[in-house]
Length: 366
Image (cartoon, rainbow, N blue to C red; front, side, top):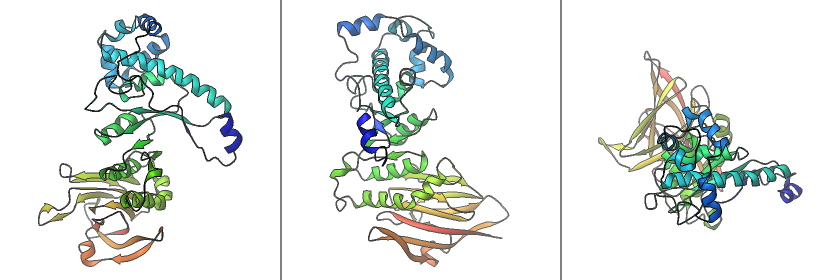
């Protein structure tokens, strides 16, 4: 950190620091060395007990359930307070890693006070028990232990390579924490939609596909288009973050073919393309931005966007729809769409191939 401050504090190329990568112990639920066994039999640290008591109502459910197994004991060894299981082992290891990571973080911030975070290798279906994933990392189920043991760490982040992407995002934001995804797939097309959803729905600080420096843009055009579109729209995205009235995202499939969200004077509906009553695409995704009283910008793929006035005495229609296209790495105005291209002013249709941007003006009539 001293070096970074010396060479980069003027330019601020480094804007935050990951203290360590995917900490934890593999192939066992906890450290069983002589020193670790001695620590495990000691009383749960007072600082952790005090945190649990103070935040009992908002604890992550898995940790609260573990503590409840002892009747919420306020003192005792790790097994006396949390019971005897691999999840107690996980809680013990989480405290050890968290307190040490905080020690490292505090020293680093004393040299150069940048935001610092830690990331987690998550628990997946094929390896659901501690040791199958690194025991002690900042997983959702032990977020509270990390918060108690590492108050100088600014946030915790998930590396998402499987499971339910949306649920992982929910678990990392449920206590009001910021979301940053430092690692995820870029080789799976559906993750382009997931990443765009994270940007539009969780006010995420960022999403980083692992190994992006090895990606040939020609081989992954959809990923490149998504980032290009987000870059172009970043002023509106940043201005809108935190305001559900101004930004919303959708992630659709056959099980969830549409969503409706409230934005200003309108209910905005995003739906899979239909043809003769049946859906013609498997999935769709995108971000809706309310950029003015009656103006919306939509980016994404394979969905139709419609508008319903909240005022039941009037109907909503789509006036102008301007398509934006990328030419030589710049987004410029393309066609003005109307007639059948907007279903007679009833919908904004995103492209079926690739990422599109369309800007629409809405009007009302009786």
